[in-house]
Image (tube, rainbow, N blue to C red):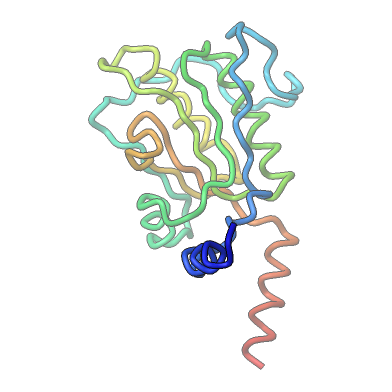
Length: 188
């Protein structure tokens, strides 16, 4: 490069910023070639999620849930995708029992790692009785069984639309204490 080329390059790169740190992003694992492969790390006797019959939620009914005491603003931010997604789980084309085990292990793992905003991809069917809609109905039921789940709603189209949902988990006790200390310092 000549001196003039270097100056042109520096001028062109003047407003370039480094990429964000991606250390808090959990990339999805590859789908196992065998859909009946072992689930994540879960003890069968610890899994409290129901495995019986669940009524299928009609396709035109959006998935929305918020636990008592959660502000509507939290759900609105979740629905509009204003929280950064920390991790995602893909349940498409998996048997219902495998989905149950994977979801249970996934939520427990995310709670241990103190991740709060999740994307669960359950798929989108064309009929109320399609496999994807059955999994969607089970996922909606299972998520309400977790004490850690504060809210969930259908995802934005860029993240899967009605074939996926955002999930907001509770803060861990340590994160709550840290948050309290941080804001207490500001008010002094």
